[in-house]
Length: 626
Image 1: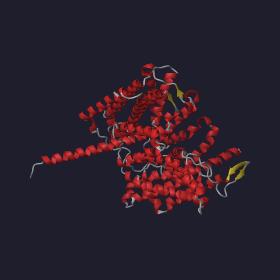
Image 2: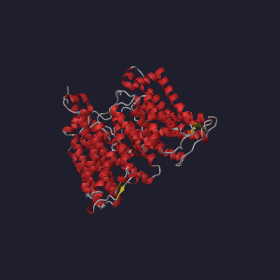
Image 3: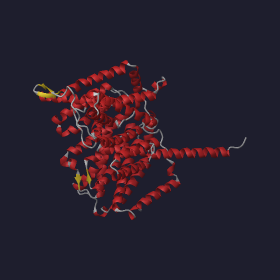
């Protein structure tokens, strides 16, 4: 009994730091609608800066002063990033802030290694809280008890801030209706900056407070960000109280899950999040979201690139790609096949996002299911590659249909987070079901048959599959089904008034996108000869989002360009520099600022404006003189 009590207290202590980070993210998203993927990076920066201020440059600050000063320094940095970067792209589609903050995360990861080194750093013990107290025969660190008291204290201070000050009233009002707050004459720019700085301060303080408990490392940002997203969504976006309750729930599940249910400990938190979102679509304490900028544009142009001349250009490009085996070596062909596979994967996510208006944070689940389905069919049943690929598509489509049935009943970030929850459930099953999936060792020996074993032949197979899959998706976009999807996306009430079933249509789109992603995953398994749980992981889902956003989420086929650019940059930078994440992050930030609608989207908009100007000039020239 005493051991369980100590475990419970440990969970409460962990909940404090988690609550600080999650409350900051909840406040930021509630007001600015920024899905701040860099929130974990600011948490990590808070820990690193606190380490330096309390060990190397302690001066007269002392330990506690160093922790607070570190949070203030990082908050100032966050406010500067909001002013210089995010403020420039507030009018772009909402998800481009996600892309920008992803670039910031990559920059922070490499900079932390350059400044503090790759080794884990152990900070000082908290003065006066270095010992432990006896609780029913078990030692409980004094610092844990301090954190247990600190959590409710910070919650109370935030409650006073948001309910007893003018700033807090404005923040709560902006969470519900930003347009009305702007109509009342409030300067939204500085309100957003203040809210962003406050959220970053809380994240950095949470990281700094971890210094006496855990070692500081350059991977701690990714460890915390997923749990923080879970806490924010379970508690309800914009609800500080919800973040506190959800942080307690998640921390206690982590503390006891490994003891009570070790077989599903990795999936337990995400299973709880899925259940909460199915039962309460806006979280435990959340309310319906206020008006927000659309994630995609209200219309998708057929894009003039597919006129007669442009169709000829596309056919010529495909023809040249088919001739690549005549001049390229085996390595280049393998890289080219990988690029084609990821272009197909990104195109499937593009279809879901641009046509269906559904932003998935867990699309890699169906990529991985396609790979595992092909591996099972090949190794266990001895099917040829064509049959194994078909089995992979079938497994991915089945998983997408099962998960999608629940997901399409939600919208916005809640939909996105439920897709993330199901993806993590699939990843956890693949990771822990060692007898079937091989666990972390994966499934090996999944090679194509003799006729396709040559890199040249396999490249042509990948090219044919990518061209066929992308063309089929494009045909769907401009089919009656695609127009119906866009109608549902743009106005659900109007679409349903003319007889369109939103849930059924989006469910079908979700399943189709999962099937195409499964095709890409099955081909990737044969290309690499193996499949691992990482094929279903969050990093690959984030990569898919980056590809779509780089190409242009408002376009039909921009993901192809985005995938080719992103994967090529990733491969080249990893080959030629040790600071690949830093350079890639800077390039992403530059591209977001220079092309706020993505590469293809911005190019399409530029061509459309030029043609409109030319048409206006011709009309003026033809106008009879008075």
